[in-house]
Length: 329
Image (tube, rainbow, N blue to C red; front, top):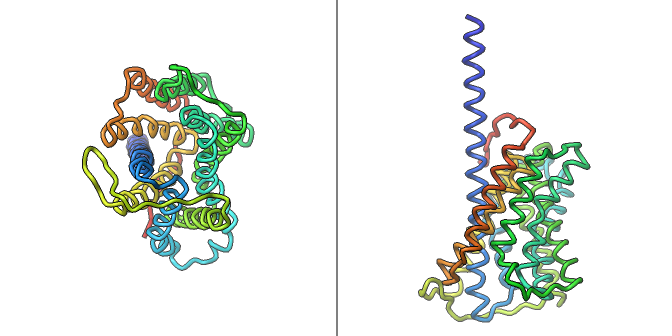
């Protein structure tokens, strides 16, 4: 009888683990899809006269305003958590939010978008290297193979093989800064020991990031340009405030919460590779909303990225931890 009981408990534990991982993958894909919408939606505003700094600033500001009440409520009046983790929140906001955005747009100002984005999306490799050097989590051959397959897929998706890409040394350095910010997002989001609920970390980080970008804009470091014309998506016109609202609520507030929760379930390494699907989704959204039809090479790249993610999962050496209690109330 005890053996049967042990077997039942083992089956139930495996089922709970599988269910938790499934939820983590759903959150990760949802976050990637939300992030992926930001580019095509922002492009519609940029075509009307907005500049990238203004779009990002309002996007982060709106997201902070939306999440702040929920983030405070999730603390359950435990203000000691903020006293212990304000450095973490500040670093998260400066590196994972404001830093990544500022460095990426600075890179794009000096070099083509494709190479800049490819360098930024080497973040999963940086996460694997960090976990290896800091935590001794040496990647296996399957994980390395998955990283290589995903990297080839990114080259195809970004259409870098057609030639003519302009690479600037200073732009490369800015892109590496964006990569560090992206890697910081996954590494810091995976930390469950600080006691910060996902909503609180997202709200605090977005608030710090928005304030940092506002300071840079107010001091003239980042020029800001606005426009009042309607934006066009899929042949339909929308007032300027509609895409801004979508950027703040969907592509920032929702995306950061989903990304943090997913990373705490899956771990920083796997979550960072699943997030590569954002590039594939961005291509699809650009096709639907802006009429930018992806090439066969880009579609092949999307398949390779997904294959790389699967290989990374198969090479994951660490068992999934206990089921995460998603308490955001």
